[in-house]
Image (cartoon, rainbow, N blue to C red; front, side, top):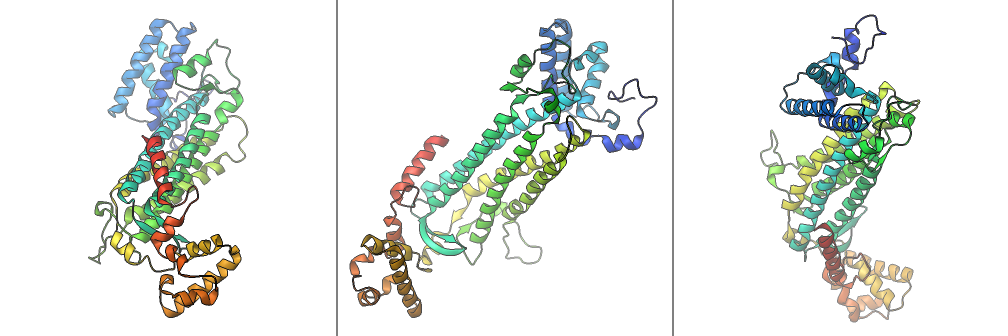
Length: 458
């Protein structure tokens, strides 16, 4: 069978090697729902404009719906001579309706058709990603009440820094995910412009109503320039950039919890159903899901790079290179969605090893900064207070004791004005209670943040 894309200008059939090389049905078949939806809207617009009769439109809609149901059931075989999903659907329609089916492609090209299908697919997937991000936020939020009184060390440079409440950590991830959701929303707004009706490159002389088609498909606006329409893949690149940022955030979280689950940290116990064992070491419970989350982030980054290279230097308007946008786009969405679907239960079901964490909170002089700030509140300049508390830390290290174990005489040895009344901050609980600033780990402030997020995510 001659491909629908080859007109009467061709004297013979396509070389089989080119057919195999140029086919995209092996991956773009997943656009069939969007293609049928777009085709029905296009036919409805043509009927409204009098280009199709009402009877022709009803026949086309009925058969396209039936074709979609057959594709749902896997009853339409894919053939490389039909190249892509668009031609498979159109050929199936023609086989059923003859010339009426041949009218469907009036006033459109595969160029604007593909761009429309892809925008519809990306829009659907962005909505799915946003819903999963929201669920992951809720998983972190659910931990806040459960871990409300747990104090853990915060790290900078992977060195113990200051004590914080565990919910402070969970809220930090909620904030990251909210920025991701903001990028998803912004990206969706730019995705949601309808290319259909731009035709091949110059528009069409057929009296179409592009605004009507856009409304039927739920687009916010009509893409304005018919030359730009078919070549624009900004939305695809931007969506994968958004996914890359999500993957980067998930990778950082995975790295942290991999460390936390080690014997050396012993901060957290991961659900065993999301871990695997060793083929040789029977004691091992490996955090493979988190490791794969970290590893698969490389695939998402690679997809972004592929798309950026793909569009580099392409002239206006459509070029066949753009067929290759789909594998990296599909893979990036599939990968990030799978990562999110696993992150949600891991966050919700993991358990902090509270006793282990608490037993080591005195290590690392986590209350040193609180002591420095207490000195500043008594009038010492920051640099002076910093130096004197550093001297106290050095003394405590030398003796192998905590800051709280130093005597009043030790305090006065570095500053005659320091006395025992400053000791209220010399514990992780005292340090946490001393915080005052907005966004800090003060219990009252944390409670406010939790209440705000409960309202926002409800």
